[in-house]
Image (cartoon, rainbow, N blue to C red):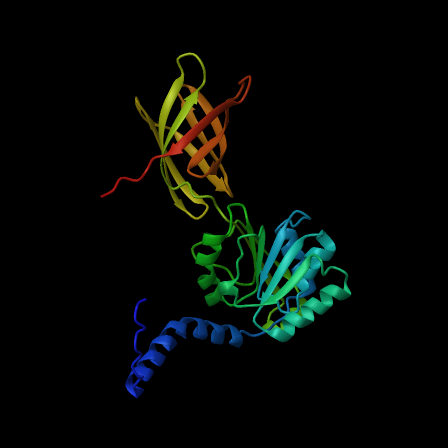
Amino acid sequence: MRPCPRFLPMTKQSARLLLAIVLSLLAPSIARAQELSKLPYVPTPQVVVDEMLKLANVTAKDFVVDLGSGDGRMIITAARNFKANGLGVDIDAKLVALSNQQAKAEGVEDRAKFIEQDMFKTDIGKATVVTLYVMPDFMEKLRPKLLAELKPGTRIVAHDYYMSEWYPDRQFSLTVPEKVKANGTDKAYLYLWIVPGIVSGDWRMEFDAGGSARQVIALAFNQQYQTINASAENILGPMKIDNALIRGDELSFDLSIGANPYRFTGKVTNGKLEGNAVTPGGARPIPWHASKVPAQKK
């Protein structure tokens, strides 16, 4: 049997040091909670809620997460009008209780749930739609979480405030007279982002159009969110590639092989690209695939 260690009595100095260490570890969470608690509660007008859910094209197949859910009308509307499932997250316990009561009153409590939680700690990986009505600095702070946790193709819809540099896939405004009292304007601005798959880097594509047209092509993509620039090269040199687009996990681009122009479409999953290519007058789509080339260590 090993001897039990003897514990020395803690001095006031060591106690203060221990307290300082604990507080330093808790400081970011405490500061964020304090910031969240200071966020003004401004209900989203029902007409804006309706338009946000339409913009996201919500259906019964979706799981909607509303970060900063307030009185719960976003998730309740998604459950009632679109038969979607959803989760509302708010730091205000009274609003969470009110939302759960309202969901039960409207008979959608099986599809609409609300929890009291820090939105930055919420697991959002299950979401297919995320809705937001938070201040601009919180939009910026949430962006890394949204990109890290959401699957490609997830739709993010925000009311009034956008994320700098990440340009929305769609946006529009509408006139909402009831906003004037709370916001000083009758305009509501809605923004939609679709989380893009990651294609940035070098790829090795194999494409066999038949006969002697089998090709091994090097593809390179530079990507900033859903905006990509592409280049291509085969054994003969650079190739003409245009109109490269990424929308969720779906990639498309135009590539000329010899005298034949092709439209390539495909999906990106786990370091692979697979899809079909078509050419004007072609009898059938031609399968293609590409693998990610590991980055070279410097």
